[in-house]
Image (tube, rainbow over all chains, first blue to last red; front, side, top):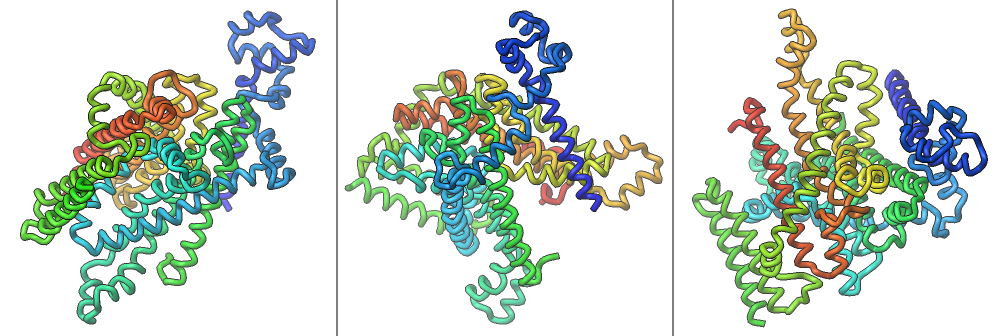
Length: 305
Length: 281
């Protein structure tokens, strides 16, 4: 209960700071618009306003503050503008419409999920290989670790263009980037998990005369589940980032990344912010969903605390 | 066709060499641990070169490693300018500001329980979000030059660093805190002498995660607008001109910079947390 109060307070403070920041951020544009509309603005000339600075303008023109929260194409949209835009583009638009965020979110989500499934599948396979083959462990594992320190996302534009030049387009290139980004965290986490049974437990299986595959299915795989879920959560967040960045070089056709890029081309800040929040909500839902599955699975396995 | 067969032979030879090393008597020695990944890497590069030449893969799909190396050596000045713009100016300044402010914030969060209860779940939540998306907004606010890239990096590294540092500052056990209390240590004494050292493994964990995030933020922010220098700019324009050898050269620079940056932080960690079990043995 106390925690809920604390979280709500922090969120409320953030919203307050946000509203407060809107005023100096937008005041210049608002005053120009008001002046063109015939209102008295202090100081009256544009050059004098430029010299005064944002805070001076706010102090001199307190009447303009409400307008700063309602400005069209603001530098910083106020929270309710973003919420209204989110509502209008998700609930009030038909989902087949090109302006519906659900449509764009779905485009991004499908690429994310496809890439995530491919990436984690291959990652788990490689991890199994690494744990069972000494050669792979020695030669591949160091590269998997090093690759985590590399900004792989820099490859994204190239992958898109290369695949386009061989005739592959649509969801696949984005899914490949997503898969690539979720692949390495899963490999590293899964190797850790498959190695997590201690010598005592492995010895016990030996005394049962268990075969290697029995040892894998009955001890190593179950023991790796907590590690797997931790890396899955990192992997799906990385997948989403990959899908969004993968949408940038395609020339802003569809998807949340395309909304971001189109918004930044045309100065549609409210659109950028709403796309950003849609991406945030999507990420939170995906990670939350995985957390839920994790809790259920670990509970069934008797591993949850 | 010959070259393709050569590539397959080279692959088989590399694998055979590594399996000999791995099952040999020296399998756990440091030399083998160092040699095996090197042999694997060289095999991959060699097979790549031979396959590209043998199958005559066009440059726009996959340039051969030798072409990338030539381009790398031939455009060192451009690559250096991009490195300075993106890594030194954008990523590094953002990294220092972001990690520093997150550290200070973490001290405040740790001091007031209410902040910890409220801010930590929010921070954990934000740390999982695709923060790269703020890049277009920050580019709009701070202009095309490196300032906006540093701002993106600040936003990206802030929350992972905050969450890790707060977790670290709670690491000292009740027993240890009580001991400091019996010494009549002030808050800052016990902070500097007990809780900060105990937090160091967590702080370095946050710092290490942030190195990669910083590079990602600086490069991706340049896709949204940049001056005519910078790694992200070069990658996106070179892709447009289909000069993929230049793109690969930039990726090599990014990989080297990322590894070196991470290695530097890991090296400092080794010196600072020499006492921690993970650093011994």
